[in-house]
Amino acid sequence: MKQGFTAPTGSKTVRPSGPTSDSIERKLWEKLIKLPLIPTPKGNYLPVLKHDKTLYVSGQLPLKDGSLGSFVGRHGREISVDGGQRAAQICTLNALALAKNELGSLEKIKRVIKVTGYVSGMPGFTDHSLVMNGASDFLVELFGEAGKHVRTVVGVTDLPFGSCIEIEYIFEIK
Image (cartoon, rainbow, N blue to C red):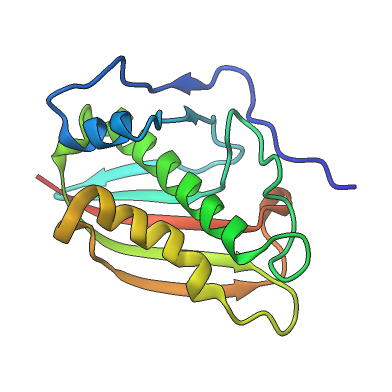
């Protein structure tokens, strides 16, 4: 059985302490959703980069409390479409935690520009776009019209640490 990835020690937690004037965080708070741990990168790259009016977030795995948990495997075998949608939402929360850490507030995100997803699946699995709807629908739910974005979804056989999905994000910032 594959072991899930565990974030290294020294990870930072970004969590709202309660409803704030930040409407995105208020929406998360009302849904009883907390921004997750920010894992330390396991390579020579930046997890987030701000350049001019653009924020780039490196590919995010569905890490929850530093572990992939039940999100190890391939769609069409170990992972269902519903499970993949939940994993995509967790990837999005991880990206938002990184964005808040970099910007200080999620209100500094003007709009979601692009989302690129890599969905691990078995040969013959063709519901990649349905899996990615978990991220896209969640972004629209949080940001409204500003959450609508262009998107690319790529089917792959394997991802880092056996993850079922990896998603990268591009945001326009104020």
